[in-house]
Image (cartoon, rainbow, N blue to C red; front, top):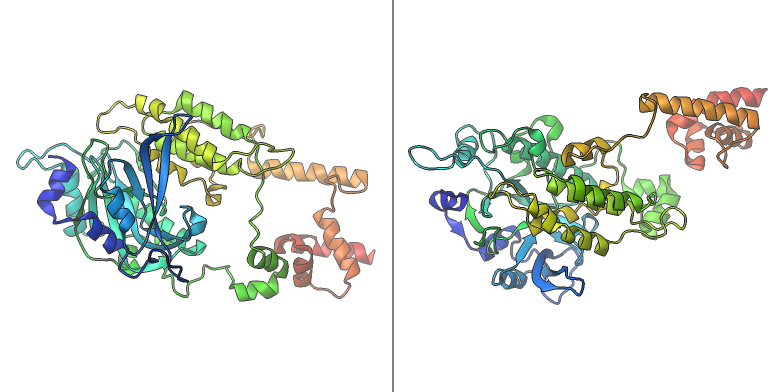
Length: 469
């Protein structure tokens, strides 16, 4: 019995149009040809069979308006189509353009398929349902979508949430923990937790009504009601819970009205002028090197994460700098390179139930986003199975290494009589400010110099002592 057969026997089917009307209720999205403040569109990504002059497949994007015409159009075709339960401003499916999230969706793959001796039911699906109903270990989704050999769980939110950065971070943490709980040994066949497919809240999934890897059509099934955030939170421990969106601020954050007075330069640059956040330009050699390593070292079980990391490195290397990165990586280049890896990734397949697909590539492309710039090296190694040597510190911990470097620099600065970095040292900055503002306090120094509170506090008394001398 296949995943789809089990779902058909267990739940009522839902048409693709009804499925997407459930995700995007009538009146929620913009109507075709209209521009209404506060209303946006969903986005469909379609990989066509057409080829570009360089031989790569063409990718099309459609806006889902309130009429759902784009949904009706793509389900009548035979191409791979992905969609996330999110609305966007414009046609770019990036985190910066995401506006509202309507559901959390979890991908469940590698389902335990050993048949039950009596009924022939796949054990993983039977245990999944048991954990959602009898054991109350997992939340019951609103929809389940059979996508061939895999399963997508859709938790439609009673109240869609705005994707402000703090809200997105909270939801990502919640989804990550729910995914970990779903991917347990009773439901999936994995050897360790590194095989869990952790995907972001922006992840697009194969659309009901469109083709699957095995040539069939993905199907949706109604399994429950819409859910509240409190309901989902109740299945995870406190550190993993997402707070209510309305009126919520993470500790340490301030309102824009406060930031306007406290950080006027930042407010003018980022809010009024809408300047992009400054990013460190990395050489494209990092991207090129990883592309070659994928071709040599990618393995089954890590293929998706290898491409996800390629997208992360593409983002790091996408900023122009005349000296450091005169030839930045572009989004178009990343798409071409990723699609060119399809044949190689598919050639690694060693299980007929675990083929590599184009939607794996599209999903990985979502990591071409500034929010992944600080993704840690250790996590990349863990996910991709590829070792990345750390910077040489002669066996010392980073904290020790940096302390030694700072002490050496301080000695050299003292010997030289001035800062060797070509700018004032932090101590000199505080000392100079105190000399010019004899009645000033630490808060004013922090505001004027841009130094952090711990830095000003560190050098404040020393500056006082030197001023008295």
